[in-house]
Length: 309
Image 1 (cartoon, helix red, strand yellow):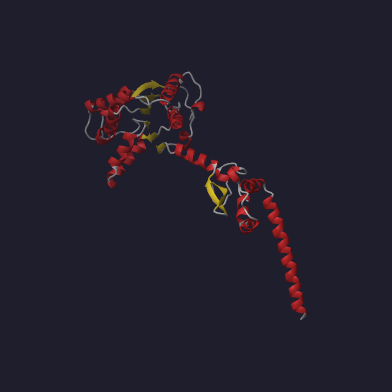
Image 2 (cartoon, rainbow, N blue to C red):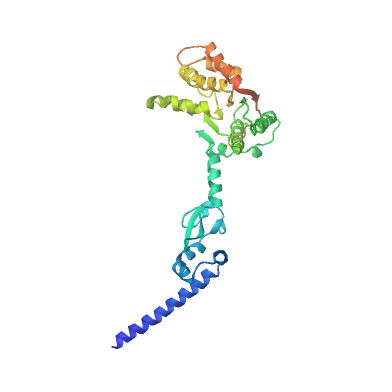
C-alpha cells in the first residue's frame, strides 16, 4: 500500500506543478501586447476558446511578428521562413495564418532585380559594379558622361544606341558596362552581358545540342545587350555572319541598343572581322558588320592607367 500512496502523492504534486506552469504560461501569453489588442478587438472570444487555442496564441507570440525581431529575410527564425503570423477570429474560433513578411517581399524584389542582369562568363566584381564607384579620371570623363546620359534617358525610354568603348587593357571599360547594367535594373530594364571569347566557344558547342537559334533569340530580344571584349578572338565566317550579324541586324531594325568594349577601334575591328578563319579576306561582309555596330552604338575612347596592375 505504501508504494501506491507514494506514487499517488507524487502524481498529485506533479499534476499541481503542471497546473502552475500552465497558469503561469497562460498569464504570460494573455499579457502580451499583441494578444491584449487581439482580445480587445474580438470581445466575443470566450475563456473556453482561449484555453482551447492557447497553443495557437503561444505559437503566435513566440515568433517574429512583421519582422519585429528580424534584421532581414536571411536571419528569419519563424516556423515558415519569411512569413509572419496573423491571428484571426473566424466562426467563433481562433486561427493563425501566415503571410509574406516585409523582409521576404524586399528579398524577392531584390532577387527579381538581380535577375534583370543576365551574364555569361563575367567576373563577380563586374556584376556588382556601380556608377558611384567609377573612379573619376579625365581620360574616361567623356565615356562616364555618355553612360550617365544613357541611364538618365532610360528612365523614360531605352535609347536606341549604346556605347562602343575602345581603349587599352585595364582602364575600366568592362566595369563601366557592369555599372550601367546595375543602374538600369533600378528601372526594371534587363541587361545581358557577354564575354565574347567564351560566347564564341559556347555557340560552337550549341551546334552539337541544336540550341544555336535559342541562344541567338535571347540576345536579339534583350532590353540592353552588352558584348565585352569584341575582337579578342578570331571569328569564323559562320559566327560573324550567322550569329553576330543576325543579332546586330535584328537589334538595328528594332532600334535596340548594344554596348561593346574592345581593345580596337571600329576601323581596326573591321580589319579583324574581314579576316575569317577559312575564307581569307572578306571586306564587304566585315564592313556590313561595322555598319550595324555604328547603328546601335556610339564609339568613345577610354584611356588611363592599367588598374589591373
